[in-house]
Length: 107
Image (tube, rainbow, N blue to C red; front, side, top):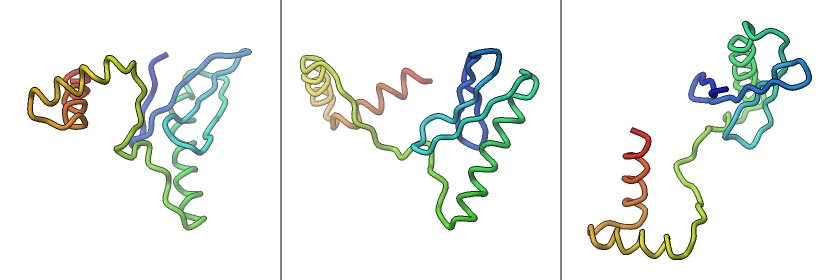
């Protein structure tokens, strides 16, 4: 099933053992809920995220943002070399070149 999104958070939905399990993705905290009816998935996910945000406020901490803007990737050394050389050929940093490549792929 395609992930669902609410307030910038994304959640997966899996069917297991006769129930639907909703898990918020891309954060270190574990946000998980279960529901029996597919018609309740969206409302359950929204409530899970709203409760998480409110809990963070009550505890005086910022809710974890799903994305921080940095990532560490692993790739074959030969691909790393080719990417670095392609970036240099375009007079760009490898970081800028990778961001441009990702942007082209997701758009």
